[in-house]
Amino acid sequence: MKKLCLFIATALLLSCNTVPAKNNNAKEFNKFASFNATGEIELETSVFPAGKYAVSLSDKSDSNGEIKIFISFPLNEDEEYYYPLEMESVVTEDISNKPVLLPVKTDGDILEIAVKYRGRIYTAAFQYVPETLPEPYKTIGEVKSPYVKKEFALIMSVQEFLDKNADMILRNWKDWKYDSIFITFPDKTKMALAYEKKLPHLFRPIEGLRLFGKQVFVNESDAVPPVKKTGKGEILGNIHGGTYSEGVFIHITELFVPEGIFFSKQNNDPDKVSFSEENEDIRFFVYIHEAFHREQWRRRFKAANEGKSYINIGEPIDTSTMSTDTAVYTSLEGLYLKSACNEQDNNKAFMLFKKACAARYLKHSSLPETAVQHDKYKTLIEGTAVYSEYRAASLKKDKASQNHLKRRLNSIDDIRSDSTGHFGTTYYMYGMYWSLLLDRFSPEWIQNIFQEIKTIDDKLYDILPSASLECKEISEDIKNSKEYTDVVMEYKPKFDHRDEVVGSFGKPGGIHYIVDFSKIKITGFNIDPYELVLYGHSQYYPKGLNEFVMNSFKLKSNALSFCYSRQAAVKRSILEWYDPRYNTAYKINGTKNGNIYEKLSIEADGIKFTINKAEVRESDNEVIIYVLE
Image 1 (cartoon, rainbow, N blue to C red):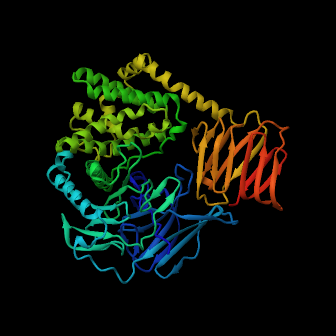
Image 2 (tube, helix red, strand yellow):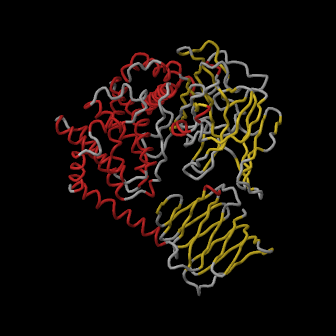
C-alpha cells in the first residue's frame, strides 16, 4: 500500500505555499486539471472532504530547482487552500512543456494521480478513510508505548503554564487552547491532542481523556507506512527536515493551517535533543516556540483576510555562495547585537544598537533582493519564536529555565565558525537579540507587528533609516574600525580559497570524465575527501578523494581534483573530473556487451574506480559512465 503523499509544509513552506488564496489572487498557481475524490481522504494529521480537487503547477521552482505541483480545494466561495505534493517520479521519453494529468487510478482505498511534465511522470497516492475504524483505548494505560503517558504530562505542564502566562509573553495570546498538537516518538508512536472529530483512521481516541477540551489520540499501529528516508535524514509526516532514532517530532497545528518542527539528538548540539528527562526542559520550550508560531500565523491570516498584504518571503541564499562582504557584515551584526544587549549604559547600548542596524543594512546591500526579503521574513518569524522561549524562561525562573536562557543567548557565538553554513540560520539568534533590544528601545514594537504585516526591519528603519546621514556615517565608522579589519582577516582567506578552487576546476582542460548517477536510485553512499569545498549544489574535492562510494561505484584517488554536483531540475547527480595528462592512457576492464559493461573497472595513473554495471560512452576528450547498479 502506498503511503499518502499529500505534503504538510514546515514553517517556511507553509508561508509560501499552504495558504488561503483568494480565487482572483492565486497568480502563482497554474491550474491545469482536476480530479474527483469520491470519499474523504487522509493526510498524516487530518481528514479532508470528498469532492473536486484542482491540480496546479507553480510558476516558480523551489531553491533546488525542483518543480512544485499542488492540489487545492475551495473552503468557501472566497478562499481555496493549496497543498504542495511530494511526488515520486520516473523518466519518460515523451517530453512535453505542458503538464498533463494522466487518468486517475483507484485501487481499493488508494487513489493515485500522475502528472506528465518535461520528460518525467510524477505520481502521488492518497488514502481514502476506511469504513471500519479501530476501537478506542479505554484508558491511557492500554497504550503500549512508554512515551505517551510521560509526554502527556509534559504537555499538560506546558498548557497549564500558557494558561497563566501566555498573555505576558504576547498580549492577548489566548487561542493557543484551540491549537492541535501532534507528536511522533522514537518508537514511531504518534500522539495527538485535537479538537477534530476525525483524524486519520489509525489514530485511536483514549476515552474520557481530554486537555483544554482536546481529545487525546494515539497511533501505535505497525500498519503505519514506514518513515520515508531521504538524503537529508528521515522525514516524518512529509515535513522537510530530519529526525533520528532517538528523536521526538512535534507538530502543532490547526486544521488547514499547519505548522511544524522536528528535534532530535545530534552530537554535542544542545538544540537537537533526545527524548529523556535530561532534556525535558528543552522540549518544554520547543512546545512554546511552536505554539507561538501558530499565534503568528493566526494573526497574520486574520490581517490578510482584512486585506493586508502578505510579507514577501523571498528565497534563501545558499550560504556556500555568499560573498566575503556578506559574511563580514553578518558577523559584525552579531558582534554589535551581543555587545548592545550586554551593555548596561543605555546611551552606549543604543549606539551599539545603531551600529548593529548599520551592519545589517550593509549585509543586505551585499545580497540579492530575494535573499534580503527572506532574511527579513525569517528574522521576524523564527526570531520572535525564540524570543517567546526567552520570555517564557524568564517567567518560569527555575534553574532549568535559566540554563535555557543562557543557552539561547550564547547561541549567537555560533557564527564564529569555519563553515559558512552557520550564516544560514542567524535569523533565529539575531531575531531574538533584535527583539530584546526593541523591548529596551521601542517597548510597544511587538504588539501589532503580526497584524500589521510588518517585519522587525520595518521597526529598525523607524529608529535608524538606512538612507539617513547618521546611518551613512556609522557605516563608514564600521568600515574603518579594528573589528572590521579583524573579521575581514578571518573570513577573506577562506572565501578566496573557495573561489580559487571553484574557478580553477577544469583548467587547463584534459580528458573530461563524467560519472552519471541519474539512472539509479541511490541507496548508499560514502564520501571521504581529503578536503571539501562547497559551492551551490556542488562539492569540490581539490586534494582528491580517499573514497567515493555510491551504490556499486567505488573510487579512490588523490591525483586530481573532483566535483560532485546535484542538478535537481533534471534529477541528475554527477561526479566529474578533468585529467590534463592527455598521454596518460586509461584501461577499461570488464565484460562488455555493446556499451554495457559488467564488473567494470577503469584505471589511469593514480585513479581507479569500479562499478558492478555501467554504460560507457567515449569520444576524443570525454568519457561518460552511466552507473546502472
